[in-house]
Amino acid sequence: MSGRILLTGGAGYIGSHTAIALIEAGYDVVILDDFSNARPDVPDRLEMITGRSVPCHRCDIRDAAGVAAIFARHRFDAVVHFAAKKAVGESMERPLDYINVNCGGLLTLLGAMQRAGVFRLVFSSSATVYGLPKVLPVPEDAPLVAESTYAWTKLASEQILAQAAAADPRWAFGILRYFNPAGAHGSGLIGEDPRDIPNNLMPYLARVATGELARLEVFGDDYNTPDGTGVRDYIHVEDLAAGHRLSLDDLIATDRGHLFNLGTGKGTSVLEMLRAYSRACGRDLPYVIGPRRAGDVDIYYADPAKAERELGFRATRTPEEMCASSWAFILRRRNGS
Image (cartoon, rainbow, N blue to C red; front, top):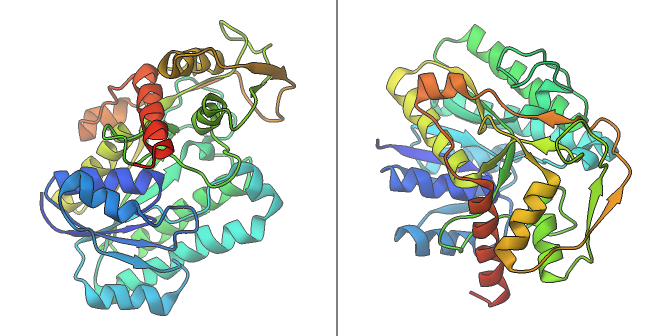
């Protein structure tokens, strides 16, 4: 495929991996990012991996004038929208910030797109919109319940897109609800690198492996699972990036919107992931069992059949590959490369 694509939040964890997938598929990529949760050297690392310079504009997604200027400078064929806050716990403490950035930023972007005549958007949504699932694996038509402000902003954003598409058939939205991204690029040059105490399991494991954190706290070991710890659907970030590329390909080919889960359809427990990371780093990682967190469920994994059937998407990388790639990235970071 070909075309020029704007990636908002494109220097972040999932955005940067998607940039590589799109460039390798023949797209021209332009990044918009405020670098609030991304390292400034990511564009240079993308060039090292792809051999191509990636234009990057430092801009807050809520800055209407700044976003409009980027659209005036480039002629885009589509947008992939990642720019958003994403920590569930923090969203409950700072709900207005999350609504402002996640929903307000989307509205600013849609306004700029409409004025520029760009009507294709791949939207980064989340499996959190399903709340506490009553059916496993979780299909796209499962009931939608926002259990956190973060989930509410994703659900509200999906509803904004639905309203826009109903009013103007030129819009084509690819909504992707993904489960638990993990791992790093095979080059070891980019990966998940949060600036503060991580919210996700794998970067937490990485910091235990480096000794930055003393141990992993496992929240509960009395769930109805084989080893008593929670089971989740972890998807390698490169598989996830491939899903965004397939979604974009379909939007450009058909100008029809779609909605898909992106996951593996399989669950991995906390202790299974801990053991896999221990094998990757070559030592047993310490952990302690703590109390359950409110709202956590026993098992949570996707039904990815629709995405495989209609997009040809299939996640293939294993938890072992996720852990090995994460550790390779961490080692390169520690060695200053």
